[in-house]
Image 1 (cartoon, rainbow, N blue to C red):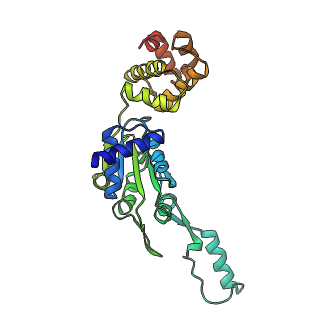
Image 2: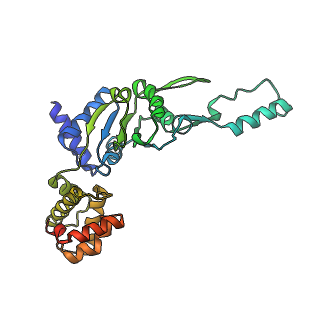
Length: 288
């Protein structure tokens, strides 16, 4: 019975152009059933962010994204007050223009909803993507704990806001630093690695139906070989798909040295990586 539900979820994700293996589909299913955030860790470019987009498509709800960065704080992630409006009203009151008693400057009219608060108040419950949480400071993780455990935010001037229906929360991390145990305890966990050659060929075929199956496999094998080299920026799934689109646009029936040389910029994004690959020889790619 559970297997049927997981398989149904996999098919729904595939209809949203996302290929998930059984393990990923299972942990996603459990995260939704248990109302728990899902923490995805793995190398950059393996499809962590895309999973959140696909889930929002499958559920037919809004995707709210919080992109994390160093220095991210509550005023940009949770909520803020519209201080200019509050100041104008206060001045008008004291000058007698607004009349009446002292105004309440902590109403919804002055409350600016940032992604986390908006995720609690949006109906139907959205998908909330907290992207690259490892880029934020450790102090920011502490701000997340109440949200992740209770789906609640406390605003000192207003009290607590709690979601009637919890959003689907997906956190991603490229593991540039270790996350706290407290954050991990609040989430279900999955390590998302690069796909196998067969999975990547299937992903390419799903996104670039014009590319021949043999070329899709050639591309998947070539990209897999590149990821084993010491590149500054190993190609992710987005680069594989871009490369396949370029090859399809050139109407190339197969990869060869000429096609690979002309389209290498779809895969590699630094001069150092381009030089390394040229030194090793392009034939290692299209003969992969």
